Length: 71
Image (cartoon, rainbow, N blue to C red):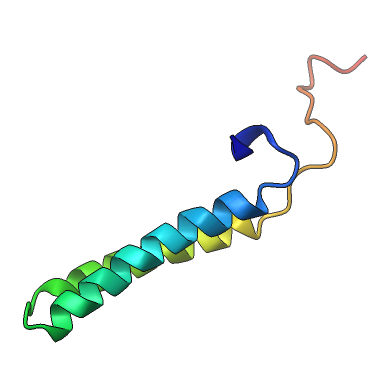
């Protein structure tokens, strides 16, 4: 729903929070004795960081035109 909204801050926050939530779930598994779970923590936090980085990119204020469209 937020993909077409002018303000998509909440959608990016939800997407990042979902990935951080999965990372926390895997941290719990790691603490409870699953030794391979730290890999999942690293991967999920990496994905959350990518979403956070993309969220900080400013949106274009004007549409970009092809050179063939300009008169």
